[in-house]
Amino acid sequence: MAYRKLGRNTGHRGSMLRNLATSLLKHERIQTTEARAKEVNAIAEKMITLGKQGDLAARRNALTYLLEEDVVTKLFTEIAPKYADRQGGYTRVIKVGPRRGDAAEMVLIELV
Image (cartoon, rainbow, N blue to C red; front, top):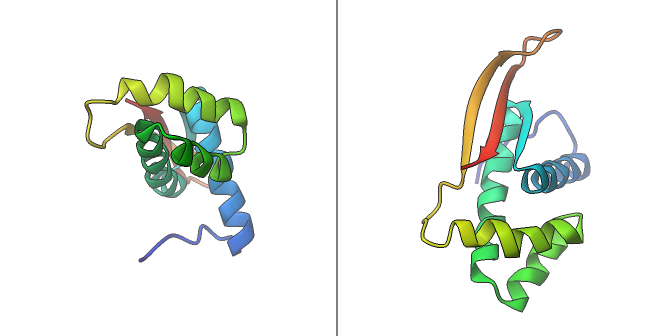
């Protein structure tokens, strides 16, 4: 399976993606670079799918990845029920233009 290294070593990349996924589910919208958004998109989809399962094992799996317990509670009580009849495609990526300084393509990733 191919993935983006994002210019970081394994531990840093994993921590960054966990932080991004937690922030996305907490605030329901974040601004980041396009490459990071593409990576965190897959993670967020998997977390919402866990939330839709709704059982204790799924909650524990989400707790192992997400950093804040209140975000997991929000995922299972507020976010997942919204997507009960939706089969994937829970996020939207909107381009907002280049970042000033290094011209990295910035995007807004949000829950649909």
